[in-house]
Length: 157
Length: 411
Image (cartoon, rainbow over all chains, first blue to last red; front, side):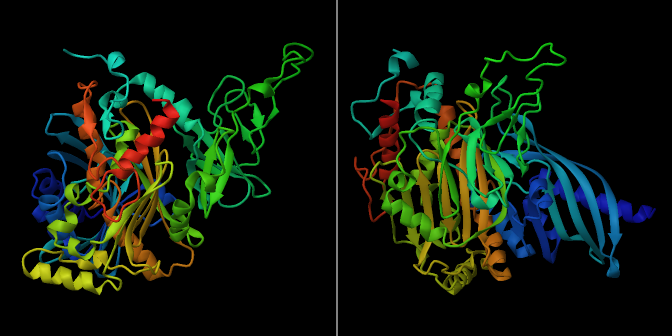
């Protein structure tokens, strides 16, 4: 087992979760490569080979647009997430050093009212590239275990 | 002086321009809606034909809160019946969908054909001359209620009532033509998801029919200075009041105007960095960029540029409703068109740039009006009319909903 690689991925995931949970959404796109892909879908869609996502972005610019929309345009009640991300299962190392990894997560949503609920569970299906700048997601597919979202999905998962 | 719901339960004298708040929090009303509306003389959307692929398949659906099974039999014919066993009332079908030659209740193995007729009772004659069911017992008479089915361009509707007129008559020519406009070719499923809305089902339907809120609650287009391109529009309200269409024209038939406008706005510090999200083609050839269509009581057909979806509402109690989305394209779509639909799906659904607020807004009303059963909302934009208009700053379609609702509920 390549412990160093595991630690790098663990560190990437921890920093990714912290940026969202600390409401530093502006930092979120930088966890992706310039043409990084981000998609939120459901296990049901994946099992049926259906391509629809709730969120689908194919560049860092699209992720920045989403952050600006969340900040300036969309209306939703104040809320926070708490991510708990499990250990990564490294599935493959592609040519050029890109790593395919799968990681389980659970996310609690804490509303401004204090109401705390288990908001989402699922797995991240990631392709991670390593360069001088550190580790980044070339692709991150968020596969939700449930097809059901409570009320709305504002903050990224 | 405070008024209880029981005292408040009447319609205000002003008529359709006032909607009483007790309607959203009265348990008896909720129960009565199930029988008078969902099980009454209405056509309820069940599923897309494309969701039942091939003979001998089934899928679960609902008629209001009533669980329903929709099947396609061995001959390819569609049927729908209550998802309830004649014996002890258990759910017959547990999986969301699948294929089967017959339906067997897991509880005591009573079996049904794909039309919902009881065909077998396990150990009916007992074992070794002992036990079993008396010969005169007719369990068939307690079978699941069977629905009438009607389809329109790939949409499957069902009704329990014998009094429901034909689907086309129920919808009227204006609604039929606008359904046909979107459902113009065989459907290819792209996927689905659901939202739980913390509100009564009627609050979401009012939101759908409320063309007035669109540019006010959903500020995505205005914030990014994209709204000026889609100004002209209007609403169509059906004769019954219950169905509606809200539409607006998109001037950007080639998609480039949007991109240019996006760039321009971007240079001014607004606009999208990646406006290709909105790159659309005028696939229906009429310049209409948005068409939201509803069929009473709870069906929505949506065209947001090239993003197409059907939405179903499932009441799950007084203050809880499931909103199920199924997005689709056509089997004739090429890869670029599918990609376009998937990108534009960012606009819709629980995380949609122009629809996420709709998951929450009905809940905001629900939370506020529960303690005001004797008070009313003011629904007077555009006056008191329930007619079609060539603008969208009107609540005519909301009033139309209540017109149809009152008729069925005897209010």
